Length: 636
Ligand SMILES: [Cu+2]
Image (cartoon, rainbow, N blue to C red; front, top):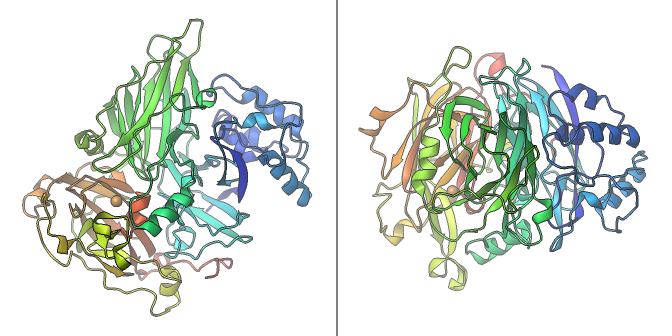
C-alpha cells in the first residue's frame, strides 16, 4: 500500500480572537494545499520550501483566492501581534524547535477581532482544522502531537481502516487518550472510500473545534461520475458556544439537564453577516457565471441536523459519506452531524451576491434558532444588492423535509460503482434508541422530574471502560466489557406512543458488545422511541459503511415493512438519521475484523450513553485477521 502523505498534526491551545478567519498562522504544506486551487497546484505546492517565506508568500499571492473571493490583507509588514497572538505562539514554538519560520509575515490580519476573546483547542492553530487530501486506496500517516493540556483522540470519520482498528480513535473503545505532551502516529488506511469524509476529535466535546475535511480523490484525476466541476469547495458547518464547548459539556453533565444551546452556527469557521461583529469575516465564494461548482459539505455541528440552501440556486447531490449517489435534484440540503454531502450547483443566476445559509432542523426541544450565512459573489461589473438575497427555509420542525431528503438518496449502482447489498442474512438485530431519565441523589438534577437525562440503545446506557475495549479484546483482559448486548430490547411496547409509562423510561448501565462472526451478513433495524422525548438520531457506525434499505415513521412492522425494502440501489452511508419516532433498516457484511463503535452523532446523546460496540471476530485466512497494534499505542 503506498504511503504518500505524511502530515504532522499538532494539537495545542491557542489564544484566539473569537471567530477566527479561515487562514492559519503558519506556512505548512497542508495549509497551502488547502487554500490553493485544489488539484492543479498540488505538485507545485508540496515542492515548496516551507522555511522560505518569500517563496511561499509569492506562491500564495499567485494561486490563492481563486475561489475564495476578494483577497483580504493576508500579508502585512508590521509585527502587530500581541503577546498572546497565535503568531507569537508559533514563533515561540518554532524557535524552540530550531525551525526557521519566525520570519513569517503572516500577522494579526489573519484573525478578525470580534466580540470576545477565548481559547479554543485546535489542530495546528487552524479552525476548522487542515484539510487532508488523499487518493482512493492510499494510506496517510498523521503524527498527532498533543501540545494541549487535556487528553485527546482523533477519529477518521467514515474511513473503514480494514483490519486496523488501532487508529480509529474513539476514546476507551479502540484506544486510551493521547496524553498531554505525548505523540501518537496514526495510520489512515483508505480502501474503497471516494469523495468527502472528515476527521474529528473523539473524546468528550473537543470535536467542536477539532475537526477538518478529508477529501479522497479518484485514482484517475477527475474521474468523477459527473462533469468535471469548475472548482471544488469544502463547506464545513460548525457550532459555536461563547462559553466554550468543554464548559457546556461539564455543566450539563453535572446538572443532569439539557446542554445550553449554542450561540452561533458557522460556515467554514465563520458565523456570517446575521450575527453581531461578524460581517467583515463572512466566508465568501467567488464564482464565474455559467459554471458548475462542487460543494463538499461536512456537518461538524454538535447537536443538530441542519438545513442548507443557496438563494435562487438549486443543487444536484452526487455523493454522500464517501460514496457516489445517483444525481438528486433538490433546492435544499438536509444533513445530520457526521454526514457529508457532495453536491453541484450551477452559477446560472443574474450576477449578484447571494447568501448561502444554514439553520437547524429540530423535531423537538430547545435549539439555537440563528442562521449562519456565507456569500456567493458572481464575478463581473455590476452593482450588487447591498444586502444579498436570503433563502427561505423549511420550518424548524419539518421532519418530512429532513427525512425525505435522505430518503431520496440512491446509490449509483452501475458497472463502475456496483452495489453489494447482503441478501441472505445470518444476523438480525433490532435496536431501540431512547432518551431516558435516571434517578438523581436528593432529586437535585436539572432534567424532568429533577432527574438526570440519559440515553440508551436497547435500554443500555453505554459506560466507557477505563481500559479500551480493543485492547481488552486483543489481550484477553477480563472485566472490561461483556458479550451480552441484546439483539432486541428487553421489553416490547408501543415505542412511538404519545404517552409511554414512566417505568419504561429507566435504562440500565452497561459496557456490552455484540460479537459478530467474520463475514456475517447483518440486518439492523433502529427503532426510535418516544420515551421522555422522541427526537431524530443520526446513527454512525465505525469501520463500515452500510446500505440503508428502508425507513418509515411509527413502529417497525416486521411483516409488512421489509416488503418495501430497496435492495437494488440503496445508498451506502456511515451515518443515517433515524427519523423522530420512526425506524431505519441498514445492512452490512461484517468483513472488517476489529472493535467498532456505533453511536448517535448528536454529542449530547452520546454523552448520555447512546452508543455500543461491535466486535467482529477474525476470519480464518491470514488476510482476515486484525493487524498487530503499533508500538506507540497510547497507554491507559
Ligand atoms: Cu441521538
